[in-house]
Image (cartoon, rainbow, N blue to C red):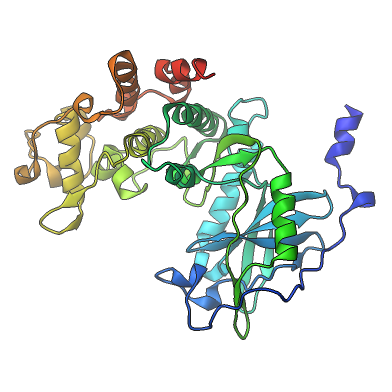
Amino acid sequence: MLPSLLRSLPRFGRAWKPLNFSNPNFIRIPVNQKIEEETMPDYIASRYYPARIGEIFRDRYQIVGKLGFGASSTVWLARDMNYRRYVTLKIFIKSVSMGQQLDNELQMYKRVERGSKNHPGRGAVRSLLDSFDIDGPEDKHRCLVHPPLWESVLTFLHRNPVRRLPAPVLAFVLKRLFLALDYLHTECQIIHSDIKADNIMFGIADDSVFSNFEENELQTPCPRKELDRRIIYVSRELRMPREWGAPVLCDFGSAIPGGIEHLEDIQPSIYQAPEVILEVPWTYSVNIWNVGCMIWNVFEGGSLFTGHDPEFQTYRSRAHLAEMISLLGPPPPSLLARGNLSQKFFSDKGDFCTEVLLKDRIPLEQRETTLEGQDKASFLRLMEKMLQWDPADRSSAKELQEDEWIRKILESKP
C-alpha cells in the first residue's frame, strides 16, 4: 500500500529540468503558404493560442512538439516535469469563442472521474489528469491535460489499402467500446453523442515513443512558419510503438447528461438514430445505433446511410429515413406515435410521404460481402441487435460486450 501511495505523489526531489528547444536548424515555410490549422475553412488566427515549443505552463508542463490540430484546438506532447512523465495538452481556441461547451466538457470529465473505479470500462474511457486556463493575447484559453495516446482507429484504418478494419481488430475495438459505453451509461450517466472512428484512439504501452519524439525535436526541429506574433508548427507523428495499448473512447466536447430524455438534434448526420430525426424522446440507446453505423463504415468500407437527397443534392432527413426504410422496412406505428416530427415525414396511416425516394428493400445480409457462412450470420445478428427502429428493441452496451461474434473472434486470435 505505502509503495503505491508514494509512487502516486509528485516526484519533487527528482523532477525533470526544462529542456532547451532553441535549435535554429529548421525548415522555414513561406509566410504566404497555408499550413496546419490555417487550412481549416473558418480559421481565424486570433482565436488560437500562440503556443511555442519549449513553453512551460504552471511551472510544470513543457511543450515538446505539436501532435495535431482541429477547428477548436491544437494538441501538443508535453513533459510533466513534476511527475517525470509525458502528457498531451489540448489547448482550445479562446474561451469566448467556445462558450458553454468548455465548461460542459470539463463537467463530463468530472463525471467520468466520479464513476466507480472498479468498473471494467473505466480504463476504456480517456481520463483527464488536469485542467487550467492560459492567459492569451486577447482572452483565456482552456487547456486539458490527458495521458498521451497513439493514433485513432480512423488513422489506423487508412494504413490498410482496402480501408477496412480486419475482423480481429474490429472485435477488440468493439469489446473496449462497449465496456466504455456501459461505464458511461450506468456509472456516469453520460451520453457520448459523437462516436466515430477518429474519437477512438489506441493507447501506447511504450514510453520510448515519446522520448524518441522529444529527441527528434531537439535534434531536427519540425518545419514552421514564423509570423509576427505566432509560430505555426508542422505536426510531428509519433513513431510506431513496440507495444500498443488498448483503445479508449475520447472527446467529450459534445457529450450530454444521461438519465433524462432529450430531444436535441445530435450526432453526425449519417449516424443519426431514427428517434433523433423524428424527435422521439431519446436517451442512451442513440449510442448503440451510432455504433452500428460506425461498424459498417469501418468494416464494410462504406457508409450504411448517406442521407443524400437527389433533389437538393445534399443531406436531408427525408432521404436518410428513406434509406432506413429500404434497410429495415417501415417504422413501427408505436414509434411514429411518439415522434414530434413524424407527421412531417409520414401520413396518419404510417405511409412515407416522399415515396419517390424509396428504393427496393435490400436487407443487411445482401449488403454484407466480406464474410461467409456462420461468421456472416453471427456478424449480422450483432448488427441487428443495434439497428432497430425502436430504441427499446436495441441491446444495451453491457449485453453487446458478450456478443457471440465478438467473443468468437477474440477467442480465435492466435
